[in-house]
Length: 201
Image (cartoon, rainbow, N blue to C red; front, side, top):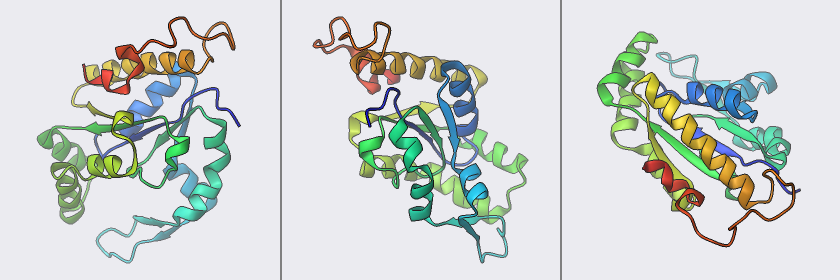
């Protein structure tokens, strides 16, 4: 099945603003916000953690999860919202956005969520050690990966606008923009906008 819209992963440590980015991007583009947490709850594919300090954590059966969302990914147009990214097949992913946040800002956000000290420290360590950035690099081609800052509301707006632009370029490149199957003008030329890394600019 040829996808008419790209699949985009929005990942990052809890508290960095993944869901906010996904909701805004879905609203602006019409792509579907695929919340993995919602999928896990709907299909009951998560087992409760044995950790007494964090009983709400779910251990997800990744094989069952992929079975549940495989058709959605093949259809395309999915904005995947989860704290992990390396389980999704690279052949079905077009862009991986790792949302980052200043450590002090992140600490305050997690504290406001009521995170216990152990869980808070685990997530802070994850961000400081760039665990999710490395996970993305290990699973996907470097040119597919973009790091986005998310400290202020303006950051989210700026990031969403840039991803919107990338989606437009993706559709042109794949003959899905205005004009249907007609090859986009200059499709054979390499432009900065054709490279997801232009988002760094």
